[in-house]
Length: 256
Image (tube, rainbow, N blue to C red; front, side):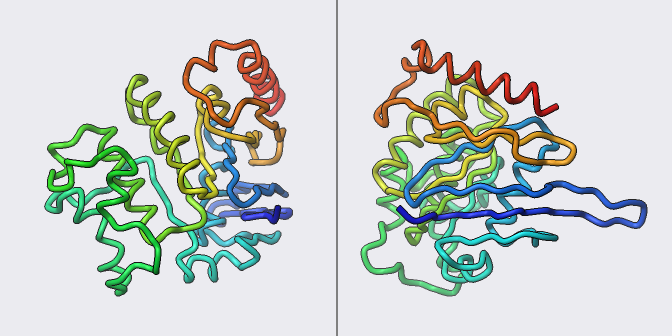
């Protein structure tokens, strides 16, 4: 299977008047089309920076990046990717449905690609059928993030980039959305890169986990999650899950 995203020797330096900061150094990774890669590491290791490089929001100082065989700028122009941030960033004066529809208005394209799910279908996909006409203040934090995910899926992007989208949620809601995201991933076949600080979340969601070390951000380990594709939260109590978590904790410790 061909790579959806491939990074080769990616280095990112931020230059200020006072100093030069290396956020990423010689980072390489690849994720297959339809895959789910969790990006795990401590604060300051460059996880979000790497995601932004893939999204063409940050230019690498060195190295190469391809998204479905295209440069990130070309992939973004072709609407190949969607981005979900930690904050749902919904417009408070628009309903859930209107927030999902927003990219069509901002992008100047009023029609969806042939075969792409409609905003209503996307809200149903993320479990918000019946909430289409609700405003953000009428929705819980988890429901607002579901709207954000639906909006990112508008137009049928082949790649979904998620930057700690559940980090600010309570544990119960986060667990529920972890299960929902796995279901959405399987139903849509979208490739996902998911940034998290949580070892448990990284293992439960991902088919692979890329561990980044800090100062500067660099490859520490790439771990294949050898667990059933169909999984629920009960898998976290199994010896196989615990073994993978333990190995990742060791990798994180060595990366400091």
